[in-house]
Amino acid sequence: MFWTICASNSRAPARRRDPLLEVTAAGVGRVRSVSVGEDVRSSLDHWSAGEWRQSLWHATAALEQTAVKRYPTLTPEEAFKETIRADVDVFGAMAGPDIDFEESRFPLPVGSDLSDQRPDIADVLYGVHRYLHGEESAMPAGCEVVPHVEGEPLFNIASGRLWLRASAALGLLAVSVFSPVNKGEQIPGSYHLGWQQHIFHVVGWWGWRDHFREIVTNADVPRVALDFSPEWDSWRPVG
Image (tube, rainbow, N blue to C red; front, side):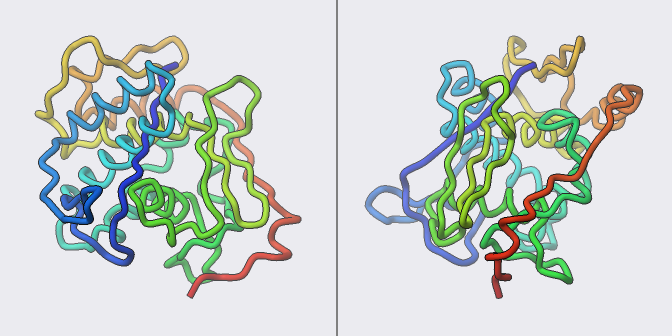
């Protein structure tokens, strides 16, 4: 399998922002003119170097750009979450095939637009995206990107703090790469993602989400919802 993750020490303004706007170390906003293909490439480069946080940074950036292309009439937050929820099976197949992400909820202090305000994977990943891009208030208890190591849980939560295994980046990259709106994106031919015995050379797989789904659906992998029971006792919804 191939996985990806990324990071930044920049400080971005809290609240809503332009998805193509980045903030320099001096606090000056400028247009971020990087394509989805470039972010995917950077994420995989950092992954290969074992730079997990940096890799995830670019993976979430690629997802945000993809989401805005898919849902141009929504806010960046709404588009990001809608994209994850619509393709949660794609994310799950690559990031955690044994996890039922549709049913899993996470006792973290991140905002949720669900009726019960209990964060789902889309809420969590959007919080991680904002946190990595400098909006530390998005996850006030913090978020640590854990190296991709065999036996390390994908998620670990304690007192509102999240430890996220770098493997989550693979799911984010898969959603971006296989999304039909990204057909025509550019990347050198050497970059690939992997699932079981299958190798997906990114250059030839942009936009082939339905075909990817056909492949992974044939693998009958049991999925179980995550249980964070003790942590719910101290969890409170974010207004």
